[in-house]
Length: 347
Ligand SMILES: Cc1ncc(COP(=O)(O)O)c(C=O)c1O
Image 1 (cartoon, rainbow, N blue to C red):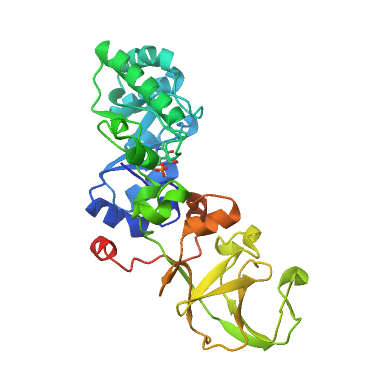
Image 2: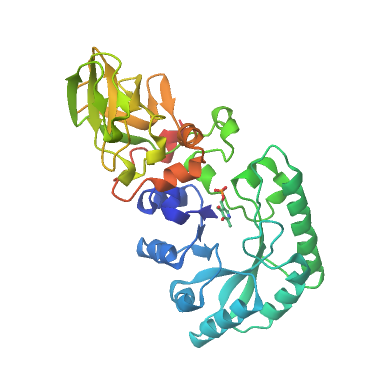
């Protein structure tokens, strides 16, 4: 299962879906019914699993879009079944067990009872049994192992009571990488699909290569004297006579304002600091007293230029967050384009 929620973690469904399918993904995990609708709109005929709790008000979308729900409680199972029955179809569904994430899912002790209940509903079929890790990327494996053991025990109990599942799944990227025993019959990578290790400390040596680069361009430039204030709040002052260049990207594009004073960019294989407060639509960089950079030059915010590179994990570290949030925050007004095939990216 490819987890493609939040517009493929900000990478854009339209760009990512064809290579994911080409790479072998044939089940898609989404977070909202609208995301499932968007996949269908893009021509995805493969299976789609909703990874969050279904809303009663959206029940018609399940048969309409052929969405597979995760089932955490009897009440949801009841109305989903009734809706499916009214449409004359059977929804493939997954018993979702809370083994310690405490977000969705049934308590392990109640999993067998829920499974029995779902098995008698005419509109639902038991396709899978699932759970979700809370700490699988962490170097401390103890909590994840506890969850895995809880999941395994519950799965066996339900299976021994006579229930069969095509799909048994708990592994997110961290599970896939750290716990081979968690793979069962289906895995659910998200961040790993986009070239990131789920743990920041592992990114450099992991062999993962971010699939997305983020570029801007020098839109204007000016030479300014020492002591000149730059941007809102006049918080940054030049320490010498220098060239300040402006780039048309800001927090409206997903570069969080709290990254003010912390970001670098790459231009022509060299690294320059972003200076002054990050504006909604623009940022400024300090190029120093002499420069070969000119208006129109490409600027790399995430990606590689010569020997230098910047990843979403580098930015996340500075912003006190995770790579997931950095890529997901890149807003809709930033156009995405596929520039390499999977093969070109890997080679
Ligand atoms: C239920 C579920 N499965 C799988 C994933 C994928 O996780 P990751 O991106 O860490 O691989 C997520 C994402 O948060 C999720 O919510």
